[in-house]
Length: 130
Image 1 (tube, one colour):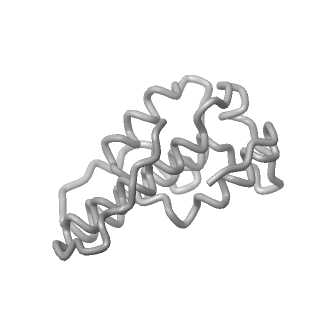
Image 2 (cartoon, rainbow, N blue to C red):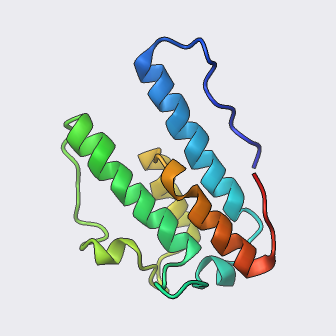
């Protein structure tokens, strides 16, 4: 996945600036996960137990709450995945495609967790990066 550039420095439209950074940071997380096998996407490398795919699911759920529900005031369906704990869990019947489709739909802000994914990726296969 190609790097999504940051919004231009002179951008004064605050909505466009926000959307630009949301896209930039979401693309960074998904790029960091590119090339991992399905097994590695579902495998935890840290004591807390989160997996790379679980992190993506959590971030999309968080985006749904903060951006769509609280900031935009949208009527949001919270029936999936259920509880806050279930945000982190990827069940065997949930496919990578379903979770990535949810991510695309949520257009999530992932900047805070990019370093977490970097650590997981390095522990899984030694790949480090920007």
